[in-house]
Length: 627
Ligand SMILES: Nc1ncnc2c1ncn2[C@@H]1O[C@H](COP(=O)(O)OP(=O)(O)OP(=O)(O)O)[C@@H](O)[C@H]1O
Image (cartoon, rainbow, N blue to C red; front, side, top):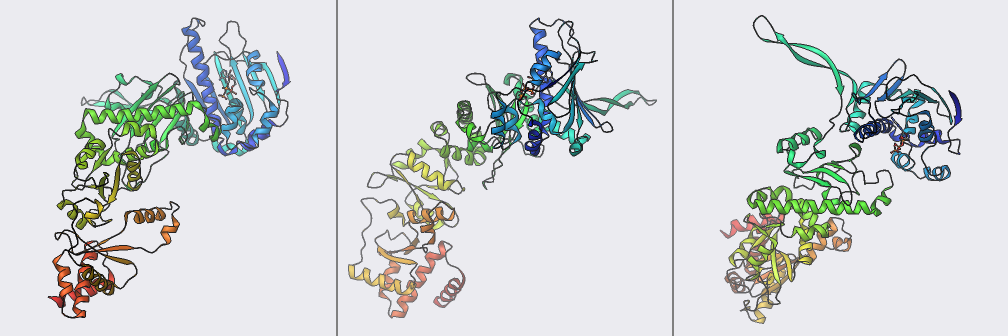
């Protein structure tokens, strides 16, 4: 039997195209050929199970080998093999719908994955690195003849009788000059580690030396000897393929260490396992997230039937879950299509929702089962939960039960608990509940103290995500506003009916205003005389909540550049009911008035860390004089 023919693709130039356009990730050839070998092995096992193959299965280890001198790489399996007819059918008639479509599409293809998958070119990716490819195969079918196929990268192929005695297929690549880098042990080992580490059939790549016990010596101590054993590069049953009930914490932790050898232990994990309406397994780990928002993205590895595909899971996993680590394995994710298609894909959306739900359920369960432990972990997971609350409505629905708010005393509350805690006392005359918050407990201490005197609670919102989270809370919590504790004097932050009246006359108030404006002498501050409790500070410097938020947003590049360009503007609230102000009014000379006013104003600045440089030096000098 000898036959020559033309591969039926109706276009002469497919190989130059493959070589040229798939160049960037040509290491994929090994993934494709090894997965074909795995498929062929799985198929024969299945046939045996179904009773359609009654021969011996034998050892089905797949072997990858290379020969530097002959410049070959071979992939050998003991799978179901192919007859000459099957080669013609499966290999020659490249499994893609239309050559013209292919030639049209390849122009826009961004990566090899896109072409390979879409057009069923897995096998042909061999031509990215080989000038000639040979198939030697023997089908499992009774009476099958071995067959050999060779192709030199043109559209011509040759099929002849083969000499393979054992069931299965051996693919030999005669590596081209440009690709000789692949004829290297470490290079190949690296590629196999990346793509084949968890394939379900053992894969042998050379041998390795191991020490084994070798009896005892004269003194009765154990002896060791070195032996060469097969170097099996993969774990055939990684934990995500097992049932959670068969696994212990140690197994999950060991697997984590295997994936990320340098990382700290994760906080906890979720075992995913669903087979309807799509198929997905995996284990997702919650790493310790640092508060500095340094997202460690691209840590989730995506597999399809245990073949590694990518660690860019951007469109498959919701954005806020990109912080997680671990693996997802799904044959239902269209791996080889463009990103825009992926986003529109129904399965991808469902998978997205499923993962979100699972993560939310897990957090809810952890919270319910052991609130104390959950609270201890809050520093690590808070950022993540808040991110989820802001970005995913589905998560937010469940998340409201386990999202915690922390106050400046370090106490933690759920959202409903907090509402209940503060609503009685922190509701203003309009019926809005005001949550007070500090972003820097040290700098805003004077204001926190003032709020404390009124028994108001102050939340601590000091993580970078909090400015967004605050807005989220305002939209979700009914009749609730959040105000930074230094946005105004405390009585103005939460306005009640029974606020203090200003005991100064209008004339006196105007005079005080005039004295302070002169003493401060800056456009940055606008002075107002108010009736506050005599317990409050004589002078308070604040920045309006709205203005500050807009400026913060401008700073973060949130498109509020108009506000960013405005000069800082602070409000100076003079407490008309404070004895010091009375003193200012009654000071003997104009000079004394200015001096006292300036001193009171500087003290206000000082308490907020706003007094700096020359002004601070002058303040100290003036204070010394006053003593
Ligand atoms: N090692 C092998 N043993 C048996 N049959 C094989 C082997 N390699 C390839 N084949 C046959 O050749 C066909 C074409 O392989 P190819 O890799 O091009 O596409 P595929 O595996 O069907 O799809 P894809 O790789 O794009 O997911 C396979 O479907 C299979 O029938």
